[in-house]
Amino acid sequence: MTSFTMGFTKVRGPEHRRDKRMPLPVFTVRIAGQDCDTLNWSLGGLLIENYDGHLLVEMPVEIEIKIKDAHAEFEMKIDAKVVRNDRENRRLAVKFESLSPAIYDFFERGFSRRFHRRERNPV
Image (cartoon, rainbow, N blue to C red):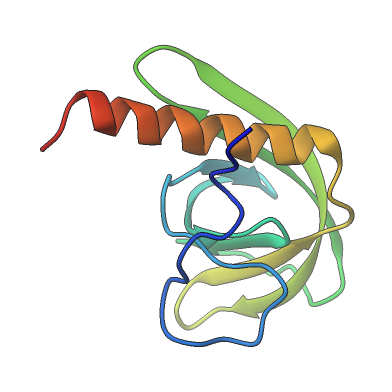
């Protein structure tokens, strides 16, 4: 099986992270009653943009995450913990409490659908 979420190039330059960040696909998330989009994501967590709230570092939070494509909509709830709330730039960084097989499959399905759709319809 080919994994689309493992071994992918990093968003920007060398980083000392356990998980590589990817900008695409963009996921829609609902967090603390707000609908936002991901700026980037990894198997360890999400960087969420356009978040305007007051969650504090280390606070537990439940995230509803979904991806839409032309053929299906996938969604699930993920337990996470706040890593950073950058109020000036309206960005919220969260890390997953644990990486379950369900979370891994969710990202793998979303990423592979986007990749295969792009190959069938080259720009």
